[in-house]
Length: 386
Ligand SMILES: Cc1cc2nc3c(=O)[nH]c(=O)nc-3n(C[C@H](O)[C@H](O)[C@H](O)COP(=O)(O)OP(=O)(O)OC[C@H]3O[C@@H](n4cnc5c(N)ncnc54)[C@H](O)[C@@H]3O)c2cc1C
Image (cartoon, rainbow, N blue to C red; front, top):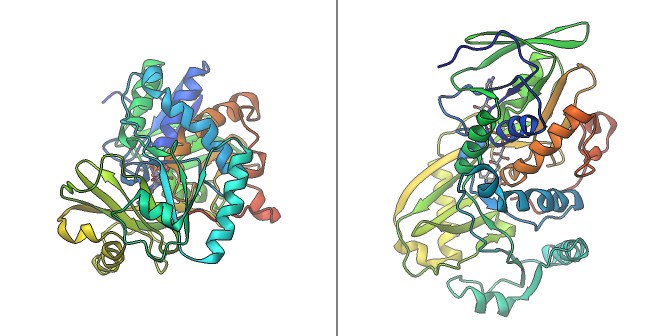
């Protein structure tokens, strides 16, 4: 491994999609002496590597739709831009709605998405049953479908950004945990790592579910809570067609999509307590699979191929935090994407590079996603998060 530099202009903490994208976009803009630090032995083993790979435009707030409108085209151009394939699949997301409250809310959401130029379609219960006959969907009242939603490979995105960033001169290190951040006179002066100290005046906290621990290092608490989410993949399911959509049974927080020749499925546990535990909860897996088989009876014939758990990085309003933290000059945060950050990672890195180099983001107005909104009571409400 190369030796850690003694100083840097920008240190990015965390080699998931946020850190990798931020480092890449800083270097693309011509920023020199950027250092990316990852505590694990490989990049992308945090939330990004555990994620379901879903990418979508269907959200309930304008800002999330607009982040997708910036980010998903960047994924479409990704291979051309970085040389890394990311296995894009435009299978569409199908939300299943089983109660009147959700029907009303999704009608409202769809109208907003359509107004912003996202052609989400409304399906009646019968249209849902006709479109995906594999589902046991007698209770489905309606659904929304957007064919331009889909899937991409998270590891491809992280490694593509890290490799492209290195080509542009970024120094990227694994096995390098940041252990403390030094400040003097209210501004960042250095980061201490397990492998040495780096003097710097700009630090980006891109530590995902661990971002709160980095915030504590500079005495600026971050409202980002780690919350376990788990999923499993199945052995081949030949009766699942290749165009099977990413299905979300909204009221149950249950989802399925094709993964290889089988399926990937997950269900959020509403009783999950915040914490860093990433072991698979077998009792919850049983509850999940019971619900999953009820919705998709073919699953009863499939075997369990693999299962894992990862951590969501949840904020009080389920929206991310971008930008400077005014209490500590030179300290920036990009995090708290609350379970849908993979798809917004490309845009997030671009916007962070603008904030750091120009003082403000210009590709999209994200001023409402600032750190101060929690102290000032300007929270944003999101509905479509599972
Ligand atoms: C089960 C699950 C399913 C998901 N499904 C989707 C989905 O379908 N679509 C979607 O868009 N999003 C999804 N997400 C959310 C998505 O994975 C995250 O929002 C996103 O990956 C966050 O990226 P990140 O770079 O902020 O965090 P991470 O990928 O966790 O990266 C942070 C990195 O910081 C490193 N780090 C932490 N502390 C230190 C330190 N002190 N020093 C150095 N390095 C440190 C960690 O090791 C880690 O690699 C899912 C998440 C989970 C858990």
